Image 1 (tube, one colour):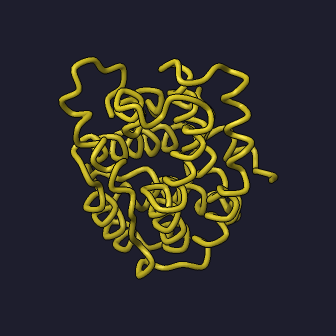
Image 2: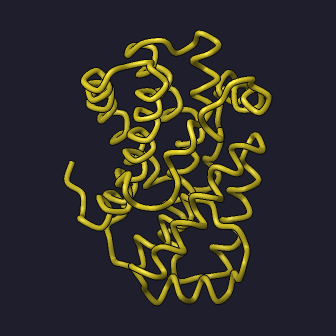
Image 3: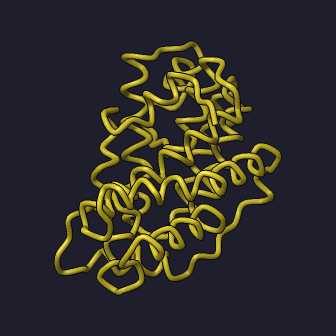
Length: 223
């Protein structure tokens, strides 16, 4: 799995989008006893990749990549991505990171497609998958690598959250990431050929956790 250098930079923990602040409901899953070790973590993340928000994010990212030169189309995708968020925290997670991603890229990784979109969208919120697809296409990066990077970035962030929650140590965390690479690649390949008609998710326990996390007594993360 080879990735272009900009994609490695954009999904690096040092890229300032605030991804470290979100656990995508993993914090609740730990407290509920659903995710307690490397095996359950890999299973949880694998299900999310195949059936949850990352599945839809990959499709939305691909659509944004294809429509990078159409600001009105991107605005519609952004609205749809926001509407797909199953909870307030998930909405906050995707739009905060997406807005930050566009802001940083406008300053450090400018391109005509991004300039045109920002001029048209104004202050409208842009979820992360739409922002990522737009900027990747604006820099001429391949779709398959873009989707690989988006999926890998999602997994790496949640595995990092799992380490901070004490679910796994550093070594087992890397083993979990390695075990999920085939699933990441499979989802990316599928999303490249899918359309908005293929959107859908079925991770009810994770979505419930995203809602219950809002009132969880002790929290390290914003989602």
